[in-house]
Image (tube, rainbow, N blue to C red; front, side, top):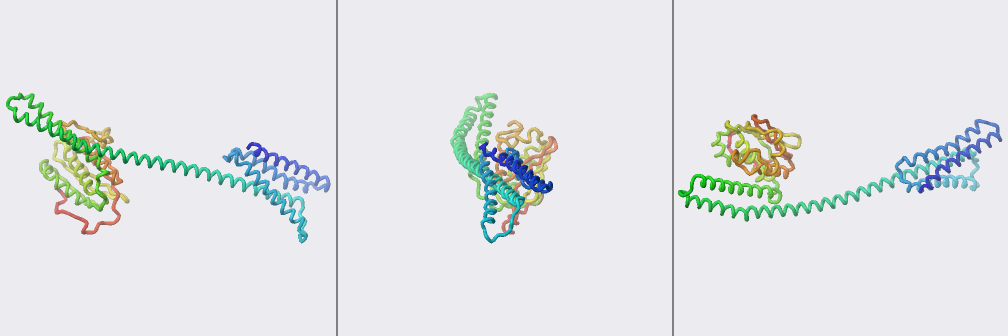
Length: 395
């Protein structure tokens, strides 16, 4: 391939030598310096351009395997002009006499045109090869993605099977352990000392917490596979149902809940109810010593809406705000606060299924605000779609 690269400077040097010879011949025959200089410029410029192309090609990014194409196109341009000149000579009806300078200009134009066409074709072919390589890489990436999706689906199936086994096969032994411990306590309670009674209570409590963790794991694993189809969901109505379910807990803790109107979104109503129930219940549980004060608000942001659940509770350390949404992450011991460590992880997975985001801003001793950003439904629901209860704005 390098020999083709050498063809260009050889042609350039040959043209320059020809330009020098022609200018000397013109000067000696006519004695007119200006005419000799014009001949040198007309012919020598072609040689200079050829030499410039020779220097430029290695730095142009064009592969040497395209040099033959460029050279042949340049030679082809010269050949075309030579044919044109030959036809002028052979055609009997043409009486125009081209000077040598005119002929040199035509040859230069043909050479430049051929060079330009060759370089353009080379760049076009390079871009086509790059595009083809990218298409091949994209195809391989799509194949790997399809394989990854298949592996993920298989993994989800195995996870669901495990969760099903955990929910049914593991809970039965736990129920048996709890039942026999209670049976021992009832039958031999009078013969057991305080330590034995306390040990039994610890064992029963551990079994109950393990059962709660298994139930939570089952819900977590089935967010995608067992979720209901999306429909228009009135979040006001969902919050009404959640507050009704939590009414006993609200009354018992003297909780005050203020709320703003919530929009309608597309999603899984049952999972939205789980989401609100976990957030409101957490706000009550982590209220500290004072009666819980909770505010639920909605802020439209373009095509999205941010639902915020703000409390005035114990708050969360800044170092813990990232990990609280991880599975089985707890910030308090089971003695301080009941729970499986799956509630916020379940919230995050539900929000992600709805193409949303969940975040928290908190300050210890001041309170926390859990913000859920969801795609906003563009068309408002008809009046028949909205199911509002007579609950006042404060509970």
